Image (cartoon, rainbow, N blue to C red; front, side):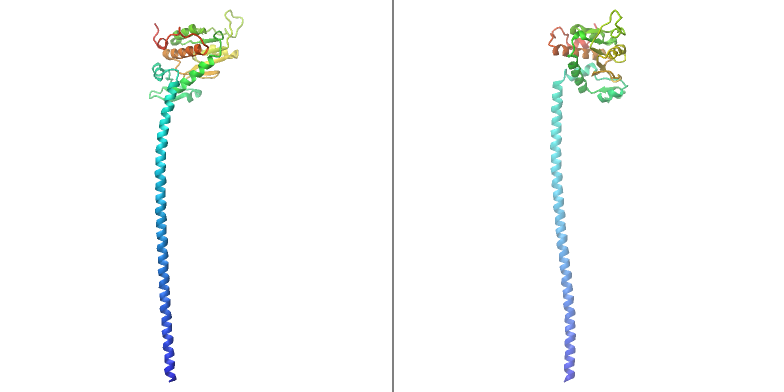
Amino acid sequence: MARIKKEEKVSEGVEEELEGKELEKAAEKESLETEETEKKKKTSKKTEKTKDEKLKALKEKAEKLIQEKVEKTDTKSLKEEVKAKKKSNMLIDLDDYVKTGIYLGTRIVTPKMKKYVYRRRADGLAIFNTDLIDEKLKEGIEYLSKFEPENVILVCKRQSGWRAAMKFGEVTGIRVFTKKYPAGVMTNTNLKDFFETELTIISDQWLDKNALKDTLDVHKKVLMICGTNNFSKGADQLIIGNNKSGKSLGLIFYLLARGYLKARGKDTSKLPDMDWWIGDEE
């Protein structure tokens, strides 16, 4: 009887042990399933987050493209507006500047003139920025208008500019030197033709070097017309442009004369029209 009870206890112990193992296996399985479920949830959330981020990025990109398009349109519109405003404020029409060749420089560009050059042509000629030509002419007119005509001289040794230079002197009352400037007339008081002046207009720094030197020696003001190959040292006011061509010099002298007379409230009715100044010599 005792033996039977002992066997029953052993049997019960084995069953409990087996049951415990089964429970452990079940628990382990449940744990694995839970981990797998959590992983799937995390993956799902990560995927959803990635999708949301991608969608957000696409929206931002679309908004940026729309904004850039709007800004580009506005910039283009603004540029056209500025261009139109500049054109309306120019001393003369842009086409008139172009047809006289005032924008043409030389193959040589001095350091101080580089900032006024827009580009170079295929043949190497430097091209002035037309907007800057107009701006400098306005400044030149304003500067010149501060002086009385008897206190100003214009020097132009270049033959192509003689005709227009003489007309400039005729309409403004400003003294003009063309063929030859007698060196020392502003510095040597013993000379018979000695005179004093407050401002000298120099047409070309190279050709009119004697007048420039005299003016600087007596510490007077200089209004200088400069091509790309000129040095602007000594100039109090600068006008840029082609100072080799008769048409270009004619246009510069015309605009200076017209602006000077208007600024000083003088009659402009005797001033020839622009075509005379830029036309061929009769």
